[in-house]
Length: 418
Length: 136
Image (tube, rainbow over all chains, first blue to last red; front, side, top):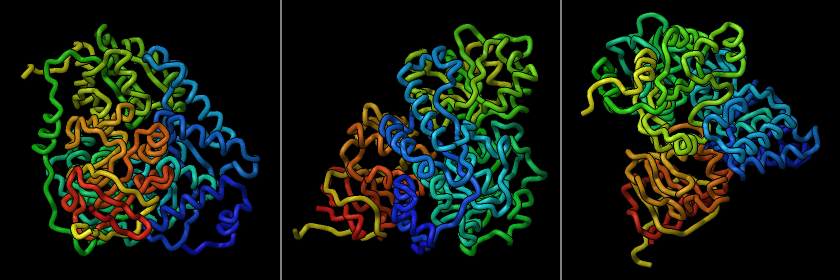
């Protein structure tokens, strides 16, 4: 890879050991993907919950945090993805002091590096929305695909150590979605029936994501009549990235790089593949659970916007969650503050739910929570969450927010047992 | 040895290792698919569900899921719950970033479908620097 003067200095260790490690890590990845050089980034978004970090990861960042201030501080604004502990709620969820302590150590280390602990995966809605053409190092699949697709910014998936390295160097290897030639659509899907709620937009992302084979595929969606909302595109993108591991989509007539199909179509793309209501129905049916006792309803993944919280509060007004069912709601610390101020938290918690801040359910040692609380049957309106949570020992069901609330009140997954 | 087969690929990362292969025509995510405490595939739908991946040369079609694998591989290695190496037909950046952080041998872009070219239980040498896998 070609290095400029500052990159050479980092590699030589002239700017400290952490930056030397960082650029070496980035060069290994860059060479793997045949990157020719680096590109500066405007901001970094780091996924680093303590469950993912583990003891080894926390010890690693603590070593960086002990370096001299001029060696350990980030070079570009660096914000964080959800953490694994809400310190106001973790005991109620069966999380242990050991988990909390690991999280405290990680937080202390990141503060020493000048991280802004935003603890959110919806930073594109709540912190600083990226700009068309802006190069980024985003470290959550949902935030990356939204920034790339809806806002036209440029980022690869920068997983924890890669985003950490980017924060220390202020740049990333230039490959993948930083390059214009890789942003063309390789597959085309035509929407036959517009999804009617957030869950269905997520299901659409899941249906298309399952048909894609790799990170390097870029789907274009035709037939979307009128712009979806930010929350609809949030659920669509998060599920698409989760099921398909893709980082970019185009929605013709909606997203900024796709005014029409010819503008973004690659030469080898096949004919449009239809996606409709029957595909979504089959997707919902694949999760089942009808008639089962319901242990927990989770609204998360992505964290809820203020508008989603208002909708949920309206659905819960005058109702009570069943005594044998729990309901968890995850949002960002800033949105939680607004929800507190606007009375939404009180309305939601009055019905028996818990509003969590700065966390997301699957990033909270979900296996251990399930074992501690005796939870197995889970229901959510998030296609992304139901995709992930099966590996943590849960049996998930997917439904709309309205259906999830009704099920939480009844204490059962709706429908007749098979 | 006369029976050795050499499979070529793009140069990978990590040290040269030799071990037993565990192969499936399926995808990989440390967060979605594994019980990292027990060291087995835990996702019910995964073709390797219930099988231990610890110390194996894990051979799968590609990457799926989110970003957590980038941190997790290093901690799995520190706790003795990592595969010996990971071979995928097509990588995503997360797998590469995680393998680089963990110093785990990792390769992709083979000349053939790697999940069809190696069988579970075969002994393989993974040689990332030279871009080749030797099946013994």
